[in-house]
Length: 71
Image: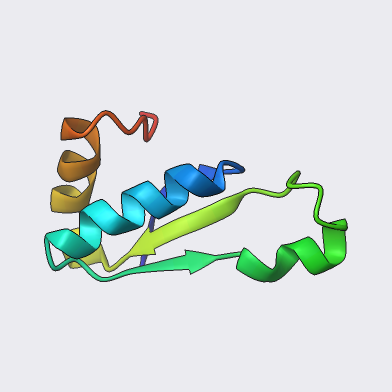
């Protein structure tokens, strides 16, 4: 699996997930339940992962839709 996105913005993760699933790309969100440890402050980022075979296409989809995924 490859990391596509790391952010504390839960709406961005939801938007990116919706874009990828609309294109039949399976994605998985990590660190969702870290709020138990951090006290629901939202300081710990969530990560969005995809299979290595889908990473190139997933990055292109996110970039085309204005999602900043870094370098």
